[in-house]
Length: 196
Length: 185
Image (tube, rainbow over all chains, first blue to last red):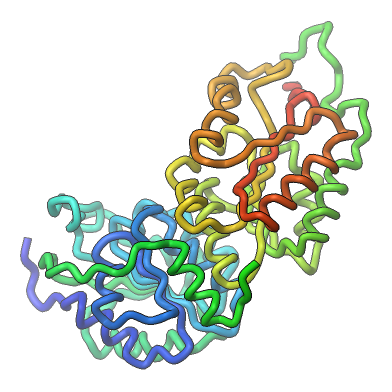
């Protein structure tokens, strides 16, 4: 299942975060969280190693709590499929500062490359749009990725959703830290939030 | 008409009905800002109060597990939340409840019970019977309120340990308190 001109996931994530400024980035369970790490560790990176299906809705909670900051969720097609209902919840709340990017390799790359629903049936862009996220788009060029990266900074025009078809190459793992309490505390601290 | 001749003829229990308002006041006092929920009849009044509040944001979910993850995000961004659901939704949350241990964030959920105390619907019984066990196996402390008079005290204790001591806590609002749902055609 090789398609021509697919983008490379690490290039996409690097471009998304290259000029992130104040943005908070949530990495969904699987390769996406590694991609965010590969782009460079950051106090505002929120790495998930579990809670599959929860990345986008976690982004909603954060976006509502910090409406002036851009929040971007970067996750995979399998993780997004498991939390598809959260797109309806987000579509209803319409947080202006939330962006969701699905890195769609059409398979479960972490578990042996089994085909996912997006390979031949499910259209996540259509789902997101039908759930009320009107700015939902399919991205196929790096120029479009860069334009989307710029739009992430606009905290008055979201929510927005993008699906980027990427190649299914299994890259060398770049593992983020996996101590949830540290990841959470580091982010809160960077936002100026005090411990209890 | 599914109501037996000897069954109570209305859903409202005869006890004091102000307990949902007491819960609302407690949530307000603890500065709860995000209130995700899957609707339940027993939470009707509280949900109305939340949706009418300018300080809280009521967030309807498609499934209860969304609420657990949402509250992680809320806390990461500096806001407290509380998840409202009914007992059948607790099973939907199991894997996501692992986040309460991984992140040690303030987790409070208020659960209206079904499947006990005069239940009419057999489909509610299995999950109602395992609700407390599911929470305890998932590392969530369980408190229960069975009478209107104790709701305030129990919810206050739960909110206090959840928000002050980062102890994930569920309050089971028993079907005895809420009144068994009566089905009328």
